[in-house]
Image (cartoon, rainbow, N blue to C red; front, top):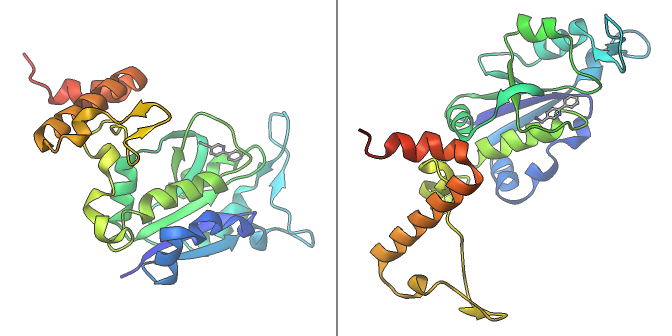
Length: 233
Ligand code: JAH
């Protein structure tokens, strides 16, 4: 069974975008997953196919109409989770990619303008998800991010390295730093332990670097991971 993605957008030409390249693109061509792109404007109203209107309560910009967005959702809705990409959403995490990649696929709803009328989000039970704390011009780039994170976890997409596709988050830590040849470059040597052939020492060094970096850069991740797996009182 192929994993099925649908994307609802006012800018259908933004898809598959970068997902048409590299491993995700090859997997798409090979039928390991499918992508249906639906232009929300096809559900627009009147001769001008209007999709938006002024916000009730006043304020800048325009809001996407609930009736139009609902009709667009109706063209694809099935048992798949419906995900609305918005900076108001809960943070998107690797655990979401894992869960969604083992399901039937996703329907991704992309907003533009100031956003989408909240009533259709509620009526359709859409999950509101954010890929980070910044404002973009619309949900299309976040949709590509979510799809990339999911598709690379599908069986067969990453090939021989299938078991290692999650190295960075499998243990809830940031990854250790990587090195390759030459062993010395511009006066900078690769850490000696990595050339030692001592696999236990290498594993211990990598673990220490992963913990050190996670503690420094992502104290939130560190607290969830190590703190809860380390020997407690
Ligand atoms: C901006 C509709 N979490 C990143 C993110 C997601 C969506 C949007 N911006 C940032 C967005 C304008 C209109 C969605």
